[in-house]
Image (cartoon, rainbow, N blue to C red; front, side, top):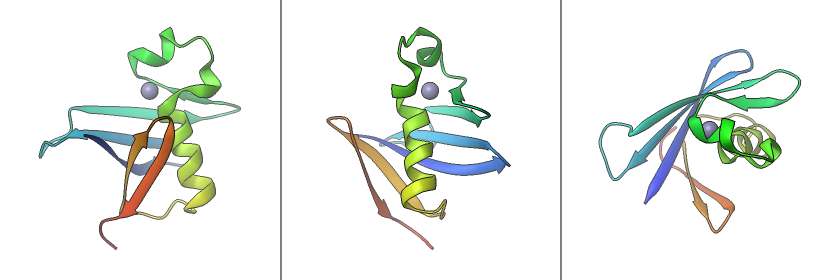
Length: 88
Ligand SMILES: [Zn+2]
């Protein structure tokens, strides 16, 4: 299963680490929030509707629902974002 961790790198700049049952991330992406969210992964450039890009949706969800708290692990389940707290 693919799981994700989020970290705020700088104001309005976020790192997403993707893990696939692995100890080290299999992907690290940077999401930037200016007027809109953008992501530096290859999928973002290919995606037609950028408001639906999953890494950007993950950051938006994390800010709005979890108030940017740390220690959460995320995964996608049929388009929904699910999460649980793994450490404080
Ligand atoms: Zn992305």
